[in-house]
Length: 386
Image 1 (cartoon, rainbow, N blue to C red):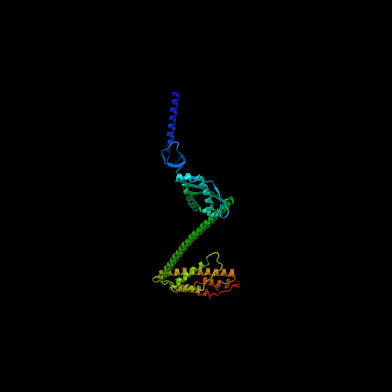
Image 2: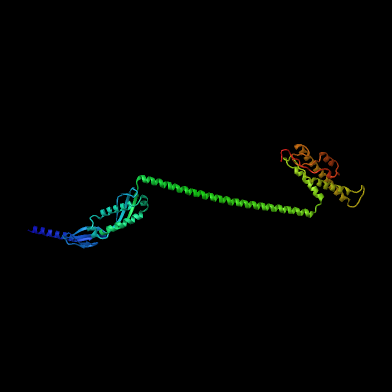
């Protein structure tokens, strides 16, 4: 009898424990439990410790109130230009009303997936491939508005819809790759052409500046050279006028410059100017004046030493004049032999004075210089020249 009582007490204690356990319900944070009493919705349990009526209350569903992310598999969609593309989408949503999410829709995840697919096909079907590839933001906004409006009565809030990828057919991808490659090559060609153009412009600018600088330097050099020559000519002019030279000295200097005309190995013809007669006359006059200044033999007068020095200088000048005349005659002879005789020097004007007349001048130092050239020079035309 005692054993039966003990068993009965044990069963009662077990029942009490089970009842206490079933009457206490702990709900975690960000979750809500929908409770039914006798098969009918009774209340929603908030997070924390909650008490239930044993054997009367039952938890129908446990709803997660956090935002959830669902990635749907790629879906084939036909565009307006009859191309089949594969679109992969991601959906962000959260349950705002656990009661409606429990009683308004049987499986809200599956319903959201099917609704997303149908809405996506409607949106993409009104676009061509190019617009679909470049209008992701527009597609996302349209999907979000349609899904949020439909799922609102289910107690679900769609926060975001993102398209992860839009994959066109392989043939279209190859064509797009070729198009992008051609576009990149075109841009590279344009950039290379622009760079080459800029380089040529810079090179031309540099050459222009260099040419300008060279021209300015050449101009400055010519200006300085001309100024130097002008100063040199002015200095010579001033020196000549300051010294006040007489015609005899100028004629003597003129005769000294004549041998330099024939200088050079390539000179074949020596042109004797017509002014040579006047120069020889001036030198002859100077020599005649010096000879007339001589005194009688044996006469001794003051200043005799000075006159002797002047006579010696005059004789030296006469000797140089005879040497210049000899050089002129030799040059004229060589020119006449090389070209065709005296007076016909290949179209070049030559004097008619003969070598014998030059020798007579050398033999007679007191011969007037005007007898060296009896006539003026005359031009000779060479056959075949105009």
